[in-house]
Image (cartoon, rainbow, N blue to C red):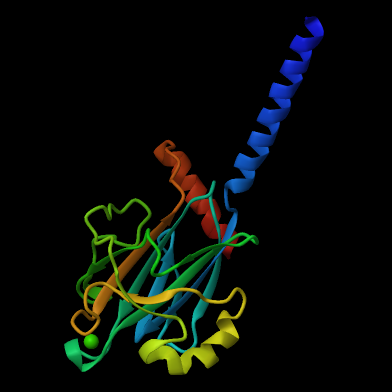
Length: 211
Ligand SMILES: [Ca+2]
């Protein structure tokens, strides 16, 4: 009886060990954010600007670290041709760890909003603690990378997006021949609830690590 009890105890400990390892393993530690936008874009991670560009055929690639599996992605995309004079496009993917976990535009989880020019928007939309719950969660989804009106640029873009292969779709917030200033957010993981001062310390550390 005692042996059986010991056996059960050992088995339980062993199984919880496996569970713990799997749980720890499931939390991503580093990520890569790849972006293209027609015509220009500015990207933020945890409220800090990480990329800005104006050539959709040359995607930006930003590497970042996650804090206990958490990171906040925010991207502004501007279409330079007013209204129907030109179509806007946003293509992005997030690659987590080396497995890799792949999140592309066109998948669930992205939220978007239309609005003013970036310079005129002062509501903290790019910040970690910004409440985006009233933002649109159904994006307008256009062709997958390689197709559609941006297809002719794919060969050049592939020189940057080849590993891993881009599986994202071009997206927009509302019809891309109507809106010209678009804001996107994607939240990875959950922000751990910590006292305000500790949280500030964590972001401070993240910030200095990137430099
Ligand atoms: Ca336009």
